[in-house]
Each structure stands twice: as C-alpha cells, then as structure tokens.
Length: 443
Ligand code: IFM
Image (cartoon, rainbow, N blue to C red; front, side, top):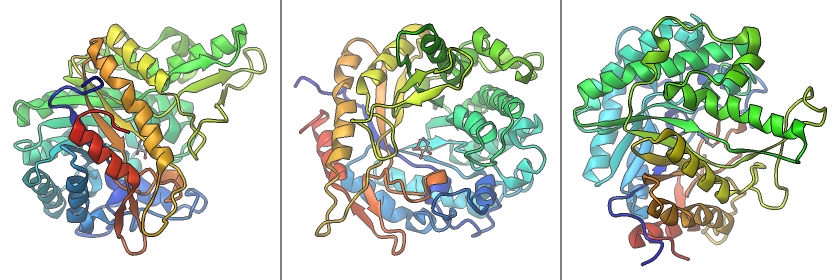
C-alpha cells in the first residue's frame, strides 16, 4: 500500500507528569515550581492548579485502558522529580518510585512500550529556592535524581528522554515569565539553557550505565521561521528567531557551539561556560525527539530595531492561534536529517487544541483529525526519501492541565471530564486507532 509506515513504527501518544497526575500532596510528593507558580494569582488563565488535573495518579489504569482501546504500541510520559526526591536533592521517596514502577509494569503487561522523559518542567521548589536551573548545583542534583530513576526502571524502560523542550524550560519560563518559575531575566534564562544542555550531556552516560541496551535522546521544540515579506528587516528577524529558537539548542548539542549571530545579539547576557561544558553536551545520542506544532512568520515593522512579531495565518489555525503548516514540518525534518544526521528522529509531540463539544455522548473533533491527518500524510514519503523517522507521538493522550492555559486548551485524543474524571474517546481517537491498525493514513 502506498503511504504505509515501516514495520515497527512507534505509534504513540504523549503526556507529562504535572499535566495529568494531580495528587500533588499525596504519598510524600514534594512541592514543585509548578505548584508554586499555579498558586500565584493570575498565573493560570483559569485559576486552576495541578490538582486534580486528570488525576492519573489514581486513574492510570483507565489511561492504559484508553491506550489499549486506541491500539497504541508506545506511550511517552514523564517522571515527577518531586515525587521521587521531594526536596530535589535529599532522601528518595519510595512511594513515588513505586508509583512509576506500577505504571511501567502495567504498560508492559498491556503490550505498550514506555518512553520516559526524565524532566518535563516540574523542578522541586526546594531547588528553585537555591537558584533553580541557573545554579550549577541543580545539574548535579538532576544527575542524582536521574540515576535513582534509571536504576529502578532501567531494566524495563529502554527509551529515555533527558529533557523536554529546553527553550520552554529556559526562555519561556525565565525570560518571558509565562511558565514557572515566572522570571523575566534574559541572563538567567540563558544560564538555565546552558545548564539544561550540560545536564543532558552528563546524564546520557548514566542512563546507558543503568539501562543496558537503552536508547536515549533529548526532545526539542523546533519552530521553522519565515520572513513575512521580502524586506531585509523581515529576513533578519526570521534569521534571528531561527538562531535563538532552534540553533541555540541544536548547535551546541552537535558540537558547533552557540550560534554567533544570537551570541552577539545577547551581548552581556550570554551564559557563563565552564571548561569542558561544550564537550560534555555533545555526547552522542540515539535519536532526536522533535516536538512540532506550527511555524513562525516574522515581521519587523521598525526595520531591524523594532520588536519581532510573529504573524500567523488567520484562516487555517487551531483555537490557540497556531497555524497549521505540515509542509513546514517536512522542511524541518528534511533539514534536520541533512544538517545534523541523527541516527533516528521521532516526532515526540504533534497535535492540536480545538473547542470540543460533546454531542449525544460523542465528540466529533473533525478539525483535530484533519490536523493530525495532514501531518501524518506527509511522513511516508519523507521516510522513503531517507529521513530515519521511527515514531509519531500524538499530543496528547487525553485532555489535561495545559500549563498557563489551565484546562481551557484541550489537546486530547480522549476528552477528560475534570469533575468526574471520566474519559471519553473522541472521534480523533477512533480515527487514530484505524490508522494504527492499517499502519497507514486512512480517511
Ligand atoms: O502541553 C504542552 C507540552 O507539555 C509540551 N509541548 C507543547 C504542549 C502543548 O502546548
């Protein structure tokens, strides 16, 4: 059949601990920066916190049943550091580890391969009180935490992701102030980014040591950029966006250092780099995880000195205002393969938020199906052209706590009723099931 995917393709869905687990005070879990941030008036659009979110701490068997209903062969989720090491760098909480042990065993019993992200944004607050990721000591705390997790789960988990979206961890959270810990300081943000990349490089050998034959990589959110017009100002704006958003993370990992144009633009805010750091972060990995949702179109109305504005396509976008641009994903993956040559690439997140309506007990989310279909349709040819794409993880398995938007933005293949915690598969979930069964895009 044309348009089929290779045998063994990973068909998955993704979540993150803080977005689904709830139970933030249960069984010895410590406070995270997201608990503190969400409790700050005005930080979350809906005024919600991470409790109960989708209460997966108690409902994980329901979630695994959903995965089985869809027919997923893979599931990407993250470990909450404050559940495992409540104060970030001290005693291990056995109940926290036991929880993930149960989840992994239940996944394997259901025939679903676990893909584990070690850090998806929920830093223990006690570490933030000592400077968070801007403090180099947090790198060492992360390595100790990761070792505890991998020692416990590494006999069964064979796919590891060190960090999710370093741009969000650093810039969105420490320069733009939109995510926890809500700081607005470029210098701190860039030091955070540096320590995240460094900790990635240092943790890879630890994962390999305690999880024999495992594959390990990092997950980046990448955003192809285009000038809105042919003006030099817009072209410069697009290039600078690319340097700061994409290359700032890709290039150091590839041993190329930080991109010069962005380095100069950041001027006095550039990070402190200790001897050996750049070498440490270039450790070889098995794959690169790519989170792709949309593209950026850049317009600089003031001829190079004004603020960079991202303009979106007004006719074809999801409810959050991100435009739908599958061709940009093709360009991105083609370029990544050609220029960085990772042994494998995976789409570790892709999906869409739309306003879902329950109609006679069903959710006919045709717009979401269309979004996912458009992004899947282009992949078989891409793979045939030689791009080593081994998996696709839809964001998200179920509606959850969408960070600063609270539960307003629903990305799930399944609807979550946040009052009853009842899960209801949307039409997109049923459609995805048929895709997985056919190992090809179906109508
Ligand atoms: O919900 C997030 C996820 O945690 C990281 N990537 C983007 C998703 C949608 O905003």
